[in-house]
Length: 248
Image 1 (cartoon, rainbow, N blue to C red):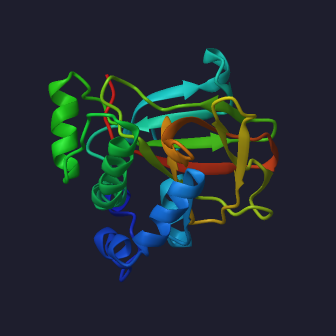
Image 2 (tube, helix red, strand yellow; image 1 turned 30 degrees about the vertical axis):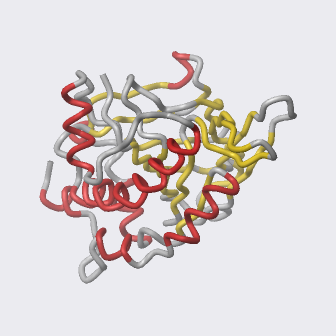
């Protein structure tokens, strides 16, 4: 991997840790509690988005290539990054994890789930690797006209972190049309709820991977979530997904 590809961050830009520290985490936590997702505006600069998207055709950066239609996942394709990750993606993964772990642990307490996640991302990865989950999970997705991603959950093993981040690398209306990020929530004894998340280039969405707690009249209960991408109408759309646990 070239030094330029490893770096990716714009010269003079804040570090990943500085960007994450500057976010309003109480507001993001409230959005996640209320809707299962929250938007971080302009987490990446346009040049950083272009740099990450530009890696797609260089197989040296990736461990595997998935054609969605071959597996019934939809249409489109994605590549999983190999270790070592590009520096910007590695640093964002490490910086975003601690505040999200606080939220995840609070959710598990409310849902009566015994699992607690460590404070540091390196300790989560150590637990994954001890469980035989050693393959990196950050991925780069590419959609072209007619492509879509079926509703799904990214679990990848027994140890799965319950929150994920996706960053849009392309500009809606300029680079592509259609291709909206969609989240659905299946509520007990109720009709499912859909959330269409409006993103611009460089925006990130944090979302629940599997389930989240909802407060009801008799206490908290679990709702099940899935996410996907609607059909691309025109152009090309790239997204980078930051999954915090590693896979088998």
